[in-house]
Length: 200
Image 1 (cartoon, rainbow, N blue to C red):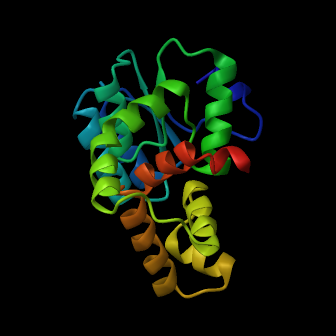
Image 2 (image 1 turned 120 degrees about the horizontal axis):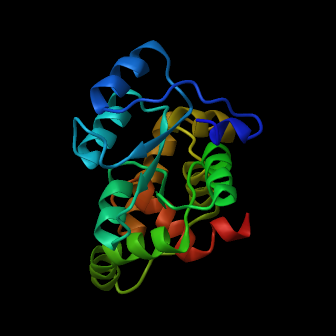
């Protein structure tokens, strides 16, 4: 908590030792970002992440763990975490991760990007092969993809682009089909692979 208090524009509001305590605190006050140990007592980290996001979809979770194997990273990100950091992370990188997740929705280290790309590679290759190559994205699809990666909801994207929610959902469906991905996190990985995030 003392370390987090040093970050400009952010204020730590609570610290807990177990998943049940976390849920109780979230019922009282929901932070913008949670730093979550995937080995927190009271639940499996992956299941806990899913449940929190289902109940509090506006909260962004940054996973913290001593485990750095690809499968830990992949399944935690697939559960909805916005980044995955080792416990011995440098303070400056931790600050950057929190600020980037808050501003852009996701923070991808080289380890996270590699783990996610490895995790979705088979599905991606299968879809691409079946369609004889990737279909190019339209300008509007690129705009929607960028806003998804920035953490905007469907309603927020519709308002920002002055289009209907139904139209946004249609673009999102097309993005999933063209990229061979299955959810917003995977789409963000696709954007990293395509260089879209790096161009912003």
